Length: 639
Ligand code: ACM
Image (cartoon, rainbow, N blue to C red; front, side):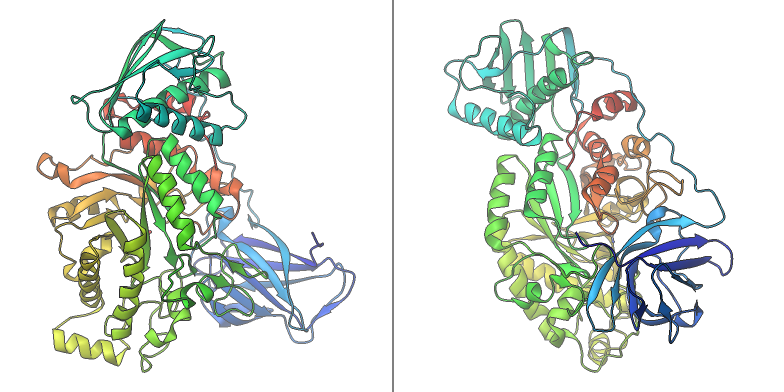
């Protein structure tokens, strides 16, 4: 590790203009004077107006990337600081994470060097500390299971067996499933004793397997007795979930024997509330190693969640190898100095790069399937396509005016043009390979946050509007998405998307699945329009939202704050009338990664809220209990 050449501090004060002002101070920590340099930082709170900067010049901004020049002739001697003030901000910061994320210097010789930075501090006010987010909790029954089962009728508890093993004559599928769940437990808790053994063990407990047509395919029943456990399951998933329940109780009883026990008699009867129990993971804003994604899938399986919604593309990066379109990853998976895409949140002077090869993904899909987790890929179109357009600029209408629209994240002209044949040519190539690779029945095509006014400066789009009588951006978007739906259908796939897919006339509802993210009421609107719905409202299920109002708690707030208790207690089914209830396919958490710049930050934001969503997806409402969940949630694995 090399010593940081400089340090960039940032402070915000509500004084001054509408959104207050940001004060940045660069301190020279090196042994030599600095001059002729530029300062780069990335920050979610952007500078709106280059004329509103005091004591520096903003020479370039690209979304969250800001590049400044110090006043002419500035020489920063060792130990000296230079302060400048940004007075026109896109938003009012409310948390430590709303300021500088990464920073680097471009020296006069053109080389770039990361520098240290810190949280956004409040100037002139004492920042508030967050409250306790997850209390100790209180158990009603001394067993550790998340999500909590539909029925527990347990009337005797004792020490956990040394290990559980299959009764003699058990079917090979059951033994293999036991091995699979045992391997999952060992990966998640490498220091815990093995839950399962395949041969009889002194001090162990046998498991007698059966199948039952009376149980749903994901359902199971466990009957406990001194001489063994009887396990009945409806299908392969139910069998796996039954074993996961046994493994969780065994783990809890060994991890905290003073609190958790293992059942000696009684029963557990269980099946999920919803068929869709998902979590989305944005691997575009930050690059996640394959190993981390694999562990995340393990965590989903441990929570009995069954869908990874894998957000593989966004403005900040394209993360899947497409063999017919190598530039998507050669250019679109890299950002940093000297690259076509600039640094963004979480990346600095060193190029940030990374994508998954199709071979890697194929193996991941197989591993996930053994854990009953399906992987739905998302390629976010037509908006959020800066990386695609950087890779293939011929997709841009050459006569389109530059900078006539900006996404909410500050990207300029970032949407695939519905009037360009090249758009459909690219999408057909992408989806051909994606459909071949992913067995999941849906491909998610995004459809969110296309900026107002998109394409209106494109003569080609204007022509299309005229010839097809399309009135504006939403109808242009619907025109594109309908064509995409037909492309997907040709490859045997159904379309999934964010709620804006319904705008401008939408796509054909039959077979389409939309995710209500902007607010809960939208879920109901979508169902009324005939779409199947997964509820992912930001106000309850966005795990990038801050967990408390206090300044020192990290996270975003556009959807308010989402304390773990609210995440747990929120009921997606709330407003769905009986006649629309079967349109509600389930619930899903969303992990957007702008602020998730370290594993520790990821864990702080995601857990235990992920388990709260898992329980909302699985456990019947009257069986939910916040205090019980809290007492159990500390046993759950983190990334
Ligand atoms: C979204 O959060 N833009 C779906």
